[in-house]
Image 1 (spheres, rainbow, N blue to C red):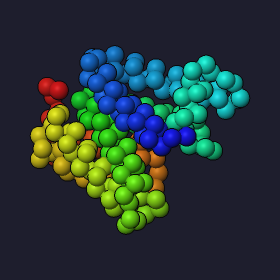
Image 2 (cartoon, helix red, strand yellow):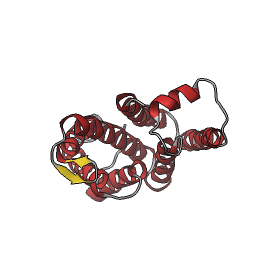
Image 3 (cartoon, rainbow, N blue to C red):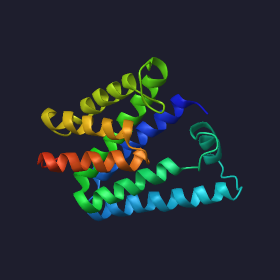
Image 4 (cartoon, rainbow, N blue to C red):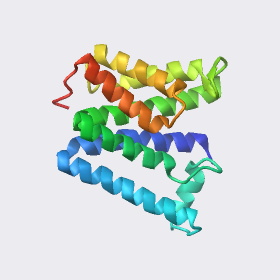
Length: 188
């Protein structure tokens, strides 16, 4: 497993997922995210039962950590996005997807290479700060900078310290922070 490849897939899931969600109407976004969830669950079930899925088996060999449930991260992405869609709407969902994709990928890659100050577990201060900065930069394309910075900071704190799946928690935290800030994310 290549961590760089894995994190590239992670980043692309967030950014491409956000782009697709924004291009669709509300029902289309719901169908897309639901279909992604069902497809990933079925592929996960096939792998855990020992079946080989052409092309996907090779990609998963390169992108999944050893000993982990196959596609757990992708399933969590879809679950978090569906929750955000139901509670906050399409625009916020896209912001949540971009936030988790950019923040988690950059914080992991920078932390592995340059991380020297441990926050908790394997999370480093250097990785977290880099992830927050990268997420804020990505978000300013979608929302004002004064909203992007607290959203990225809250997401960084969640990613670094929340003990459960960050693929769900970061998305929900980003959307909640944006809602509390009172930013209307229409016109994306």
